[in-house]
Length: 457
Ligand SMILES: [Zn+2]
Image 1 (tube, rainbow, N blue to C red):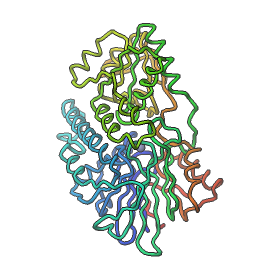
Image 2: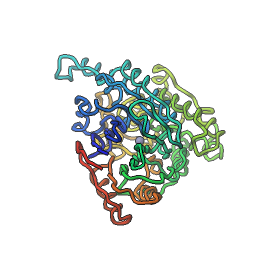
Image 3: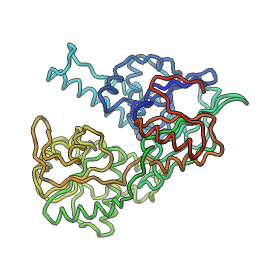
Image 4: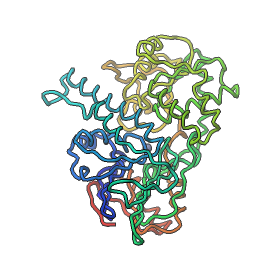
């Protein structure tokens, strides 16, 4: 078995591992590089060895694991793309939105002359995303699946690991008695996630690829529900509104759940308007409702996520909302305030000390969200400097990623040490810290591969 590490080997984005096994070539994840410019430039490179993949298996729908698939397809690649049913559904929302953003970026660059080329082209278009979606083959979770074609002699098993609707660890079993078993963790969820059940154990692996996003730290213990209750009540009593910049998929549904629970328990005013201003979050909420059985909460709570919530659809409605003065709780994307409708709400609310902006979750360095959480007194929005007089907070405790303790607990459930473990999907310190813990506590053979490295395993 050979593994070529082509992404998420020196960072947390661009997850791509090309595996040659039992006479077949399969690409585990086809992620987009995000964040640092140095990493993002890789999105524009030729597919190179990725072209040789005869099939793709996606661990989950987050764009850093799936968002380069339309680019691969744009380069002429065709083949089956295996993923869980939940992932297939979410991809319809996420890949089309990603294509829309790519097209928007190119349009903006052309309008403002940012591009050094004659004409900026999108990384991929909606048409490419649709062609990619047509390649999806849903794979039922929790049991061995026999693919057709190049992987016909292999067995593929997807094991739910919390984190996000549809997210799974991937097990690829080579043919024959001496066939080896490769396990890829994907992104592991939390033991006590609000929506998703805890990650399921995978019994055995000869070769293991494990993520390490939080490989060097444990999450702070915070009661997000009580913190939100306190912020909402204080703000509303002072005549202000609460703005929750949120990721449309996963985080938005978790926040809606908390707000519904607080309302039902009479801990925040029952008549306080809750407004959802993100068409994508609304679509995702619908998907969560369809997949209610895969969540850890009772079905009736999932079905009631949007009960009494005012849904904003058009851009004009959204603009009008920004001028409204009635206290409310407003959820809008994007989660790190890097774009989207939340920007005009921030522009309207940040200068007013009565309002409170609450970020839920990790804010990547350099993003507007990170600057606001860091206490900057002014931020630039749509080319204008906006003074920050509103309160700004960050909710901990809503992370979708296992922390170090939970990663080690999941690893501890393997019946035998894998012959070889590779730590991927972490910033260098996180990956190396987890490597050290695995070596010292579990005594396994483990290493951190380099970007572009090819190993025999
Ligand atoms: Zn993820």
